[in-house]
Image 1 (tube, rainbow over the protein chains, first blue to last red):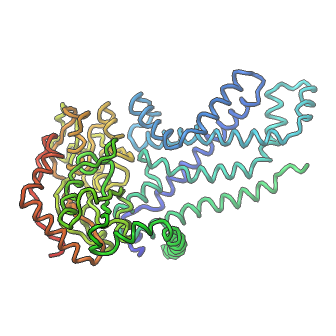
Image 2 (tube, helix red, strand yellow; image 1 turned 60 degrees about the vertical axis):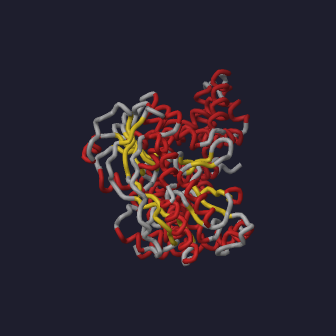
Image 3 (spheres, rainbow over the protein chains, first blue to last red; image 1 turned 90 degrees about the horizontal axis):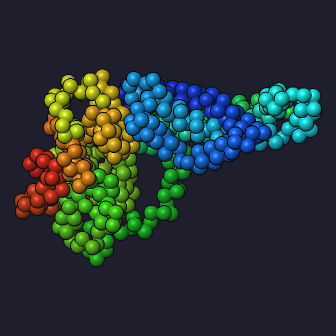
Length: 224
Length: 284
């Protein structure tokens, strides 16, 4: 039933490696972008608050497939923005990271905003009374505590992101879901085996992530 | 690989158990009448086709079905004793074709279904009823591709994971820049605004797209015969009776000229030179 694994025809590890790379780049990107968005949403500048709210509500409620295909057809093919990628392979990967970052950033932002709400308002008031600016209050007082409170929700976002990378197959990024499509096309007699392998692969990626970050979340939680 | 295989086996068992229970409830009503071989003539017949391939199998916005596969299936159903209004069309996307047949959700499938050995392990085929080749669709004014080697410098587009895409990556043109999209329509967009140079898949499908009203005159087929795809009609494994009947129906369709008429009607407008009707090789 699993003979096709040994034929050497499929680069299973290579495909999952692309999945891991997509996840890591997008995770870093969306952590940064999500933090910036969260900062905007709690900032004292009305324009930034309005932008943050509008962006989060718009992008979070757009299907990811639409964002990914839109970035390829719209940005790359129609507008010619290839993000410095020479071939479809490079361009596709970068566009996928861009779309995943734009999408996941909104979830990071909302998780972080809930973390900000766990920090007692008196702390921010005290910091402001000491003469700290908004940026200082945010980066020195509020965000460090907020992050420690939302490790577990962020782990959920990361797990969702790992699985969302399969959408990148829609623009031809050679990750796990694309290899699965090829296998389904060729191995008509072992469909469930193919599904099983990829289900297992994703469990191997996401379960340790959840366990590890759950443990971290317990250790760093702010005891109040 | 040992550990991987053992793990995969466990995961498969779980998936199997889950899907087996999930399927039990939903598909009973269609399975009961389509599954029984040579079911009662007053019943409906369920046939699997593609819903999204112009020229072969397409669901039009007003809910009708048209295309070469549809015409062949209608003819075969007629020979089996079903009138067109007794046919219930069911969408058969590529990944689900084998399961639709073996679960008995459909009586047979005519959906650009190439006959190959892996598939024959799960289902039986009747036919073939059409011989297609992997080919290229280019802009009408583009004459730069004349042979397979020209592809290595070109930007190609095909459907994610399809046999055509794999052929390009593994054998035909390893250096070609290949974009994979979920459907041919996205590729056509790219072809039209010059982001890609050629769309590659079976020539029957390409001809169907080129023949569409909105695409007329914009694209043309190159005519490189890069592979042979024998389209067969998929049916339940071991159903020799149905296989013989469908083969007889296909032979009759070719003999009385309906086959040629169906090809001309659905694929003709694209200036497509089809192969003559292939010899029936499945069954006997």
